[in-house]
Length: 219
Image (cartoon, rainbow, N blue to C red; front, side, top):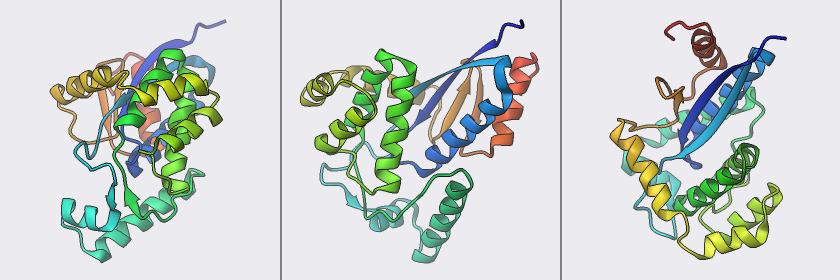
């Protein structure tokens, strides 16, 4: 029996980034196509789109218009493009009224990653659904705790993490590390700490990059 080729992926992203949700689902689709010939380990790394966002969040239309200078027509066009990509991947992007600070969500993800990779990925997916599909406040400790529990994580321990500043320094260190490496937008998919695929690419792009790495070629 052939031993699967090990591949490590650092998935740098935020839980309020729609193209991060698209990119993750596309990447997972690509990995599934590779079959048993590869053993992929995905580690989720923190990136905050809006690190200085106030606790109460901000109206998403006003926020995007100010940040990117987009007109209402451009914003609606972008929303439709994201909804269509999500539908192709089986993910529902529904209407959202506000955008939220995500630092505590990243602290919770860091803790989940210390448990095991499956727990971290389950929590990541649950947070993306909570925000993009259900329109929930992913800075709320009540929401974060409920999502952690439904993801199979220990509720008592998750509550203790949220009630403290545990893992805050670790998250900031990771954010600084990827900023120093030149990551300015997400998703950033780093393969074997060497190759970068940027953006919510189609699954064929991720599959091609992974096959090249497995076969020892430059992606």
